[in-house]
Length: 165
Picture 1 (spheres, rainbow, N blue to C red):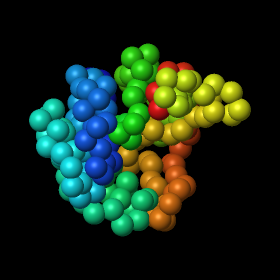
Picture 2: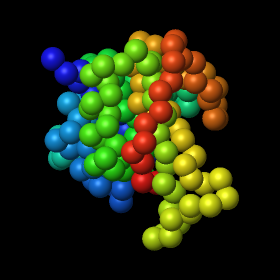
Picture 3: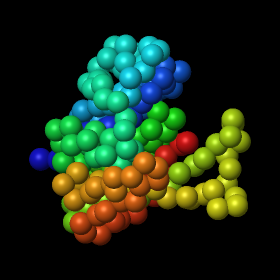
Picture 4: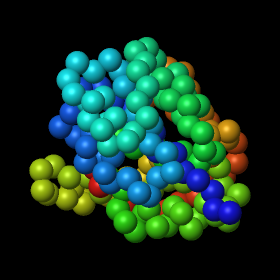
């Protein structure tokens, strides 16, 4: 039996981006959760219309908020995506195969950053890896206001597929 994946998305007033974000993992993820920070636009309505489970929670401390969001996932493997991020098909395929047979607690992946249509490839902007996939019982954010560190019980693996950002 293959491991299932929950996608967690943190949002606040993201009505212009939330649909494309959800559609990028729809049919691939076993569960899509949007944890919304009291949006005043149509973010939650759009997310719900696409089948995402929407939970409303005021963000206090970023690390605490993210830990709470990931704890809501019903699956052990969590892929964390921000509203302006899209996993490539290559990355999604790689994730499915790697979590089926790994001892790693988390995985980082390269970020392909864009400004408009221009890929910022040089100057340290690529591959600029970030940890976005983790086993939720072996991963935690530091509970601080901004730029929380991660704490991992075990090894962190590396994926080749990109996140478009």
